[in-house]
Image (tube, rainbow, N blue to C red; front, side):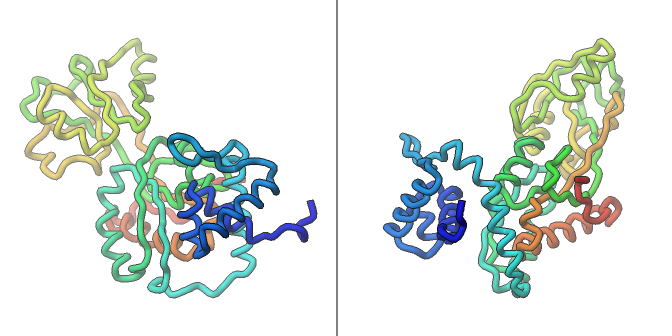
Amino acid sequence: MNLRSIDLNLLVVLDALLDERHVSRAALRLGMSQPAASNALARLRHLFGDPLLERTAAGMVLTPRAEAARGPLKTLLAGVTGVLDPPPPDPRSLRQVVRMVMADMPAREAIVPLLERLAETAPGIDLVIQPWRGPARTVEALRQGDADLALAVVDDPDPDIVRMELFREHYRAILRRDHPAAGRLTLENWLEWPHVMVSGRSERRSHLDDRLAERGLKRRVGIVVPSFLAVPEIVARSDMIALLPSTCLPENAGSGFCVCDPPLEMDGFMVDLTWHRRNDADPAIRHVAGLIRGIIDAAHGDAAASGDTRVPE
């Protein structure tokens, strides 16, 4: 293909169309007229030999060819921006939306302080917080450009994902203070009672169940909820038992609940701040990432923060 015959400005329009899935919204985002955006879409369809966007009863959807192009296109446009390498702008001049995947546990610590610091340092940056749906979907959102940052657990990320380790978390068992097993939680009576399980993917089995199965044991999962924040109320008003990351324990955990180490040794997990390499030079994303790093370091006493860690090639 002869690049000299292609209007590369079309790629900027394509990026907006694939993000917005709507011609008028893409035009508004780019500051162009709706007819001009429609004309650009027609030219792109001819160039790709593919509809790219198809109308359905639920609205416009991307074709498989368009889905496959999203990640490489964002990487290409970010690379062009990096070549031009403009001087870093004053954060107060930035006008940008930063989309972040956040598990509810770090979100509870970070969101309000982040908003306060953005109001002081970069009031033109707006946030869209997206729910954590598991490591694989988080990496896919970063790769496809559906998310700019993730503050969550990300296992074995894509080589193009930059990972900054923030802190290591550990689990605690929690049950209501007057629960029959309170004060004497053994493995045997822990398994006698139904458990609350947290899963963003509605799964009823976790690594804990595999560990139990290795010992010929099984637990009953009485309820699966999508958020750790729902757990304390369920535990307080039932006979159910739960495992919570220590930072998700309710503020009145010491007085309203029985909190103890699980009767089965549980591995902790690392909470990371991650983004795609193409966003390394994006000033708004870098600014938000730096603020989050400072907030988490302050909350955890700088004990677990260990600097930027890039996944090996």
